[in-house]
Length: 273
Length: 311
Image 1: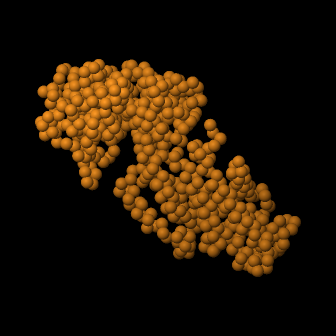
Image 2 (image 1 turned 90 degrees about the vertical axis):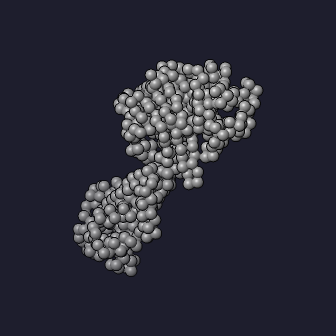
């Protein structure tokens, strides 16, 4: 029961974040890049979280920042999961030479730590946010391919796959209608956990200042407050809100991930008889 | 006119160190409307033979001979061609009902699946047909049963679901591999009665180790031993007057005949003896049996035996 409450609270938090990102213009009168008045104002009327060193409204930045941060996390995770699911199912189901080649390639890429690699790649090519998201999706799929492949290997041995063949199902039908639903719990968990990872990594990259600094997201906000003296001056309303926002969404996604297994696997369900 | 004819079918599996001869030069004709049982103990190759008829042998199998169905040779045909036949014209009731159903799909959707794959009915009508089939399989509340998952059913119910899946496309031929294994006597007879009704105007190829099941469902019995057919005859002839010593031994080992087991074990399919494969366990074996391999001889028009006793 308490698990259920945790799940619903986390889902509510996630929905709130998404709603805030979608309704940003309704929540604040300022654009996040607009210079609205004096610099470094304390929280007060008109500026609930004060202004930064350029006189931009911090609350507006926080609200609009949710858009880039969330979109980045979900897009990268979606791409990663799409790649790892489709590749994992195909190589796990057919096996043979293709499987051997892909698996060995994964063995080579696996030990390379993703975040440092991303830092190097973005520092060299200074790509846009979209390209970074693509890159992270591809790099992030590597580990997932392994997990899905391992699942598919055991599922492909089961009698119901043989049974599906016996009713005339094609390989594609078996992969999409029989194997996919059975790996779906893992895929969903993988999606939630990698959106959390990708989101935090995106914040990390922008905090280091490796992507377009004119985009407003939580990472650049933290970076600005850090480099422009917000931290030294003790302006907590500049530094803490984006930090807490990141912690909140990342916690919610993690908890949803933990609760998902029960939801998606009918055999684990306790109240379904 | 034969609907299915198995011609000199051999199936071998090569491992690194040995060659497993699972099925060897099997010839069997099944006419339209015929109900044929293949009887043998575990590991004699009967399931492999069933899989061969479905064209479902694993990739590492080395196959010789042919399985003819209408104008097709199932062994040689291209996979998409057999896919069109499988489930639609030749359906299979698989062994081990517990794992043959997909655990994450509702029973109704699994019964409707062959109808959708072969594009016989649109989705809605297929679901309605699934409910009708469940009703025909004597489910009390077919609409509710269709919405449930396999783990919510008992073994006997799952077996009936498998029968429903096999019959969904109204196939001409049904291959049933141990349809009643693991079921208690009451449930078993229920399934058998159901199968008998459903098979009335279909062709049945039953794979079983159980004489009673074969006697109840089939008009003809083929006895398989160590990958070979050792005796074929009509159910009545074969059971009332078994000719091959192995068939005699099988009947004597039934509880009703006093439980006299055949001494010894059947040979490993990797190390088959040169002569008669039953030689080591045969009470009537002679010197000739251990050196020469007996052919399958015609005894009468409908009866064939692989034994030197009937030369």
